[in-house]
Length: 442
Image (cartoon, rainbow, N blue to C red; front, side, top):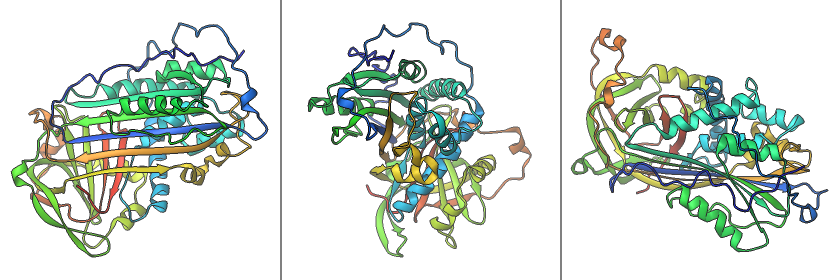
């Protein structure tokens, strides 16, 4: 028997943000993914009764998760993230872009629990899940969420999930239970014909992104029966803050060759740094333990972002990460703030998930005759001078081998032209956000 969404909606995620950073912060980012799942053309969802079954089983298969997520999941998410970013670049070339591959991956992992047959195979290929079974994917996401959300007392990261179903529709109980157990998803049923349902969903998004994303659903279409939503909220303080008195107007050179005056922050110190013939790259840590960092990749004067992106893939990324080493230097970085939104149906189709959006879709493990209608994604990011210093930050990054290397000349990195950036969890290797900044806005 299929299980009805609980009207009470077990709310595993109603919790306040655990770490208060005060009024000062350096970066706040939010990401939301929306999956609109609609009935295929042969289904009349309005007559699909919501079958009433017993209450969900109380035992949880994830009560004792492993200490570390399966490295195969991190690798899969990294490969998927760069494939997705590459496709988004094709559609928004020349624009500022900021996405959360982690948010998209989590939302699609929840959806993957309802896929079957060739649709499941297509999603596995697109999401790079080929070497992972469903149990590995789900259990590793449990551990990954726990590690990310407890990274550092000076870094606030929350990950929230929810499923919002049309109260007239029915879904497989195992599908709902797995999303409860493994993704602590809020499960709720709504009257999709009631205009207030739109506000209920968007209010949840607003709350779980600390007001940075105020709405993700603009309208509930008559044929939509389910929304799967992930929200990520990040707020971190630099390990070493930028001195506001050092911020000044400097030229930023656009891709067109034009220049604009823009507030630039300046700082000197010891950083994890990497340079090759194509680019300079630096890691700016957050918090006390530097478990998360903001990575900046600046193409050199004889190169550009387009050339850099031709080499941006998971394999090269891992090679680059291994070559960062402690070095003294100075950096000048633009202060910026932006909102970004994108629909991901075309990018996901381009990397092999097209069947999931078609009438050939098979989500029988979720419910009867369902397909994905759209995937929407919104982000917000702000980078400025403020943050909290933590003396132990650089000690984590120092390795015995560094002491054996000859001293290097101090570097100078002036981020005065378009650049690539990413927020990475250094403990797990997870990439939370990545962006292409071609014209910073303050």
